[in-house]
Image 1 (cartoon, rainbow, N blue to C red):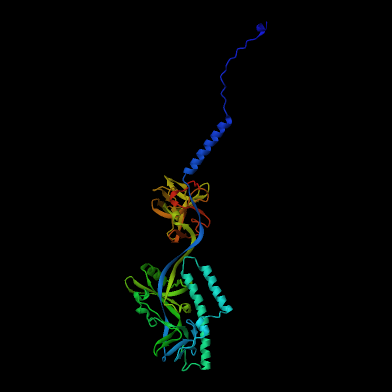
Image 2: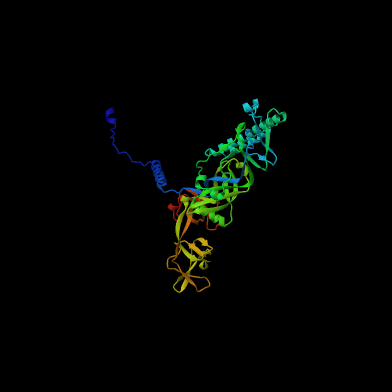
Length: 466
C-alpha cells in the first residue's frame, strides 16, 4: 500500500545560466584606459623647460706681464758686513737709516738665532683678516690664493723680525760694542727692496718676447750679516707711484683693445696674486705684423707688488648683464619683412594687422609682429599670416607694398601658457653654454619666463607637454 502512494519524481537537468560580472568589466575598461594613457605619456615627446633669470657673463683673458717702474739701485760705499734696519717693501724717507756696515759680522742674539718673533694683538688681527679674506675668496681650485695668503702672512712676520733687528742695531750703535760700524741713510723717498734682477733700467721700447717669457731670468737677493764689497748693489728704491705692466697681445685681444683705445676707455685688470682689481690706462705698440705689446699703466697699488717683476693677470674685457639663457634654446625663424608704415589695427578684436588688396577692395588681415627694427623701420612678421605676392595698402595712402622680402630672426619659444610662443632675443654676449640677451623689449623675454630648453623641437602654437 505504501508503495502505491509513493510519488515518483522525475529530475530534469537544466543547463547553467550565464551571468555578467559588471564590476569586473568596469575594472577592465578602467585598467585599459590607464594603460593607454601611461603608454601615451611615456612615448610622447616631452619639452624640458628653463626658467629665464637675470645674470651676467664676464670674459677674462689671462696674461703674464712684466713690471716696469722707477727704480734706483744703490751700491755699497765700502767693504763690510751689511745689516738692514727695515723690511723689504717698507717706505723710507730722505735721511732714514737703511743699513749698517761693520768690519765684523754682528753677534747673533738668542732672539735672532731662534727666529722667535713677538707678535702683537694688532699683528694677530692683521693675520686673522688675511685668513678670513682667503676663506671668503678661495674656490678650492685656484692655488694662487693660498700662495697669496702665505706671502701676506710671511710679510707680516718678516716685518716683526725687521723691527727686532732694528732694535738690535740701535742698541749696538748706542753701546759702541762693534768696531768700525757705520750707518748709511737714504738720499731719497721711496719703497725699499733688497734684490736686483738687471731690469731696473729697462726701457719700454727695449722689451722683447724673451723678457716677458722670463728666459734666463735671475734675481740676486741681499741678506743680513753677509759680506759685501765697495760698489756691490745693496738695495734699491722705487721712487714713483706710477707703474706699467707690459703684456704680449694676441691678435684677438689687440683688436678688442684697439676698439676700446679709440673710445678712450680704461681696462679692468684682476691680479691673481691677491685677487685685487684696478683700472688701467693702456697703449698698444706694434713692432711688426701680429707683434703687438700692451702697456697697462696704473697710478696706484705699486707698493702691493713692489717685490714682483712678473704678475699673472686677467683682463676683464667684457661684463654684460641681462637675461641669461642656454644656447640650446635659441632657434632661427623665417619672417616676412614689411615696412612698419603699413601696420594698422582692425577686425573684431582691434588687433594689429595689414590691409591686403583683394581685387578692387581691401581686407584686413590680422598678423603677429615678432620684432620691430626701429633703425630700418621694418617689421618682422609671422610668415603664416601673409603670403608671398600679397599686396598691402598703406592706411590713408595710395602706396602699396608687395610681400616677398624674407628675413631671419633669432628667438626662443616661451611656454608660459602651455603652448609655444616665439619670442625674439637680442644677444649681447656669450660664453660656451649661455647667452646674455637684452631685456625690456615688448617682443622679447622677461625675468622668470619659462622657455623650451631645446628650441629646435617646437613650432609656433605647439601644445607643450612637460
